[in-house]
Amino acid sequence: MLALLWMWTLTACGDAPAPDAAGGGPPPALVEVAQVTDGALTDAWTTQGEVRALDAAEMAFGAGGPVARVFVREGDAVKAGDTLAELDLSLAAARLRAARASHAAAAHQLQQARTTLTRSEKVREGVLAPNELDALRAEVARLEAQAESLDAGADLAAAELGRHKVRAPFDGVVTARYVDPGDWVNAGAPALDLVSTEAVEIRVAVAQSLVQRLVPGDGVTLLSEPEVAGRVVAVVPALDPEARTALVRVAPAAGDWMPGASVPVRFSVTWGDDGVLLPRDALVLGPGTSRVVKVVDGAAESFEVQVLATASSGALVSSDKLAPGDTVVTRGNERVRPGQPIQLRETP
Image (cartoon, rainbow, N blue to C red):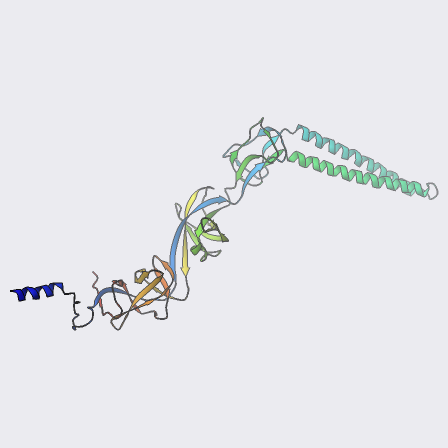
């Protein structure tokens, strides 16, 4: 009885591995496999973008004074050149009239002096002394300079009058109004905001890893209702120091877009580096390393690979031990030991 108990204890406490069918080594690993292929890896990245008007202006008066009239309100559509608001014009208009009158008087004096000089030059020689002709010529030159100066003064007064008005620099819609009649404003103080609804772009902040794969001209999809195609206009080669993202400008091919609206943007990115394609499940990830289990003559061979890119559709890796057509383990690879026999798992 004691002998039987002793033998049972040895059997229960033993930790000998289960032999394989041949009586040695580990049993075959039950796994699923896939084929290594060549080609490019394509993935889709979706991120939020913001609609921005290509033309947007915060308009202000170029002069200070009391606001006399404001002709528009928020939402009004305007044409380039329309007068949107104006200050009290009385003083500026008076200065312009005075400048033009002074120029007109100087121009008249100049014309008379030129006429006198012309007549004097036609008089027979000896009637007028040479110094008298020189004096007439000097007077004409003086009046020419005076007329030119007064003409410039009239232009300056006209420009000053123009600064008392806010005109639309382009076709657009008024989005903000900051002044009303009777308000006193200083030169440069905001009066109206105007945006163009004809020309817009989508601005997207994208991750550094994606920016490196984008170039102007790449196609994108704007996930609006309905979807609209677009193209990358520019990639700003600088990262935001806090968000670590870069600005990408996208031009929509069509559609009515409201500046300030948010729209998802889908980028199709292709990695064509030298490498081979395999399913993501074929990667065995470790601390700072990635390994692949390859089936060679019915047994497992494990080695490290360099992961060039990953996507939902697979992974692009580089290794001199992998080639298109090789078989790699995709399920059960975490438990497979080097040299262990491989047995394919039946899939329904």
